[in-house]
Length: 445
Image (cartoon, rainbow, N blue to C red):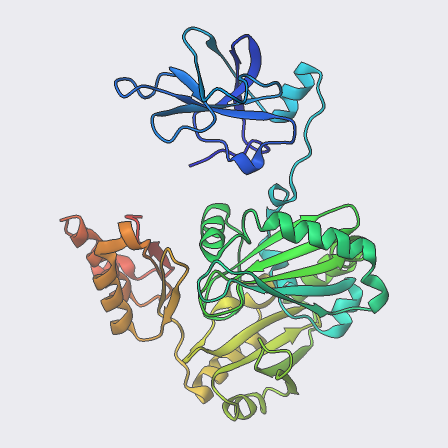
């Protein structure tokens, strides 16, 4: 655990007579503002939690960290005895409030700490949009990123999505600054991205078989939408860039109203069915606009490596229904979670028809691991077996599971495994599992 000095509250204190901010958790050194100083308090082996000395960084017996706008030791000394020179005021404040009280300039918040998790309604803006929608929202382009085989590399490419005159030197300079700062956190490595998504939320519907996460960054002139896919063997991030003014106008005025209208079952709606082949390769990608009658035939006739079948409703809300990726194929349930689709009888009838004609099974459950690996299962027995085999090792592997099916027998079988792991008997009979809904677990939840 560590603290975010730009968002979390710290405790005021005095150390060697100087006002400081104290945190019981370590303060990441990359977050320390320029011209500020950060030190660790170190305890003894007999009393590790009581500050005995102050050091640059404590490798053991960490008793807290302090942030100061004045130096508290000279560069030649490795440590300084604290003795009775540390007093906690027990007042919890933000960095901004502390600076105001001390009458000093408050440091600027780094870009990486200005990201916010996306809302469910914004999910569609993180995926490929029709050219007319890109134009309406002021799209400039996107950066496609992957971390290589090791998970610690950084490969990226730029894909334009708007008029060339939007790609100004001012924009390019800011984009470089944004990417370089994000590489200190969420874009540092595959492991860092996985941890960031785990801790910060931002789940969005859509994508391939794996859970995607969305984050939004707004600067004075531009809006950046970062889609994270913390999965080995795939592109792990797409950073889409927009003119902020156009983004706000398109989303808050026309866009938000259009999304509300798309979710209104009392209004007339339009539906454009599409099939996409090779969606992750711009050079080979092919988009087919089809009717609902044509969609199953066109989809089934494509190579199974990477294809989608979905629908664009009212020209603004899109969802993939049938997905084939990385040797697996399934029918997504994202439509049932999105306001624009979940109460639409046309979509419900189409889903039932497509499932019958394509004979694709829906996902029964998903599992994830700490290294970012995510696997979806359509076979109930296979899903139950992997939970049974992997759950005992969840503390070291980071294994977690998400049961998506409403089948009472599957849901009870998974719960039986969890209770058995702790030497207990599942107190819930099969009848209790008849109400539906998904369950999640893997860490005893």
